[in-house]
Image 1 (cartoon, rainbow, N blue to C red):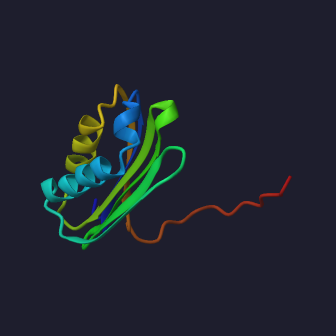
Image 2: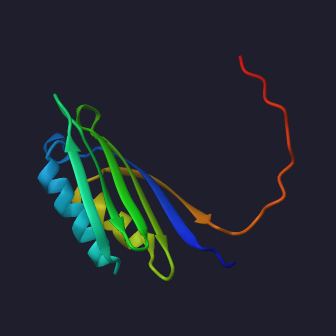
Length: 126
C-alpha cells in the first residue's frame, strides 16, 4: 500500500529517572536516532521542566521525532514520523534501547494514504 509517510508512536515504561530527566542526554539520543535512520536534521529544540521532565523535537527533512518524559513514572511517550523511504522503527528502536525501556507499546500508522470514505456520525458533547 502506497503512503506518504509512516508514524511510529511508542509508550516507553520502566526507563531510568536520570535518563528521562537529562535534557542533554535525551537531545543526544534523539539526534543520534535521526542520523541512524538516515534522516537529514533541520532543527533541534528540547526543554527541561522543573522539577522534572523533558520535552523536545528533532525536525528532519522527512518530518520529526518527539518526546515527552515523565521521570517520576519511568515513562516517556515518543513519536517518530518519516516520509519517503526512511524506516521510523530504526530511530524508535534506538531511542527505546538508549532510554533503557523495560516495556514498550508501539503502534505504526500509515500516513497520507489518500481520501478514505468514513461514515459520518453525530457526536454530542457531554
